[in-house]
Image: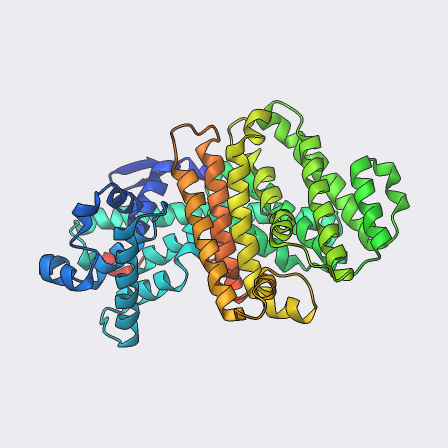
Length: 484
């Protein structure tokens, strides 16, 4: 039984709030998204005093020409979603340069503010909500905010209690996943348990609310199974064995699994069969219909895509960029992870919603961002292995005119366009039929991709993941002594 009961009500001083209220308190300490979104509503002429550094310092009151204000301007500028938003583009350009110079010159005397600027500039698009919440709670400085100390103490206490209470739930969920991992003998695969822990941490660090428990668990399970089968394809299992694997998934008959060619393939199939059956049974309660065939079809699509990529490599063939991305958007695994978890988010998802152009665009943008970020980080390794990679394909198409660095820059521009288009769809309300909570799940996956691949391949060498996971899942926040 998951320990969700203690999340229902929390009382501190004269305050009495439920878990959603506590989350609002926590978010108020760690985020100013509302004010950032309101900046988007300003007209271009209203932003004129912000678009240029010199103009900003000469026209804005000295009270607001500080690093804190400029950091908030930088964050607001990241909410560009349309092609022609020159004011926000200009704000982004000069605030980025200004903040980097402040760090380089050691000009920020406030150590907490220095850390906040450093953290924000490092990978803003890959900042997962729970990581940000904890960091901001720990960096929050009472002396710099106009609020009564007693009120601050109560608010901070509520935020910390909410954070720590959720940790108990998340630890229980991870134990459920570890039992699933062991029951399906996945420890016998080439994928270590840390992949399970990393997968669960990343989805939990952004979609952490108690009511999303089943969505988190199913997302993490799917992510692990994708990694297991990706390892089978990457490590050159015989083609006939992989074709047999796909045929057995199409057939979906557990009694046929004795036809498997190897222990590793059989292990994966049994784990997949058991997991899909369990998820379909559980999702029936949420959706009021059987979704098993939907899940099987997504797995079939993923495996066929992986086989296509393997054939390109083994035959040393050169797909077009469009052909490569058409397959790569599926094999990166974002679509199957999000849509599997989406059945457990609350709203009923009809076939019309699942097959809509809006849903297709959502997973296309999220998957494209993930595939391109991954390819940038793996370009050298895949070049050595002579595997198709979007960077080397751009270089080849340029007939030696563009370098790897130039190709990477162009791909980064494509990634940024895709990220903005996805954000635009997430925020869109008019004419949208996909529930907002589902769209948020795609946005979470986009952030996870930036978290994983922006600077290194964290999935293969998870130093930052291990550190952040401890803070988010295991290490409770302690109430600062200096607020009493």
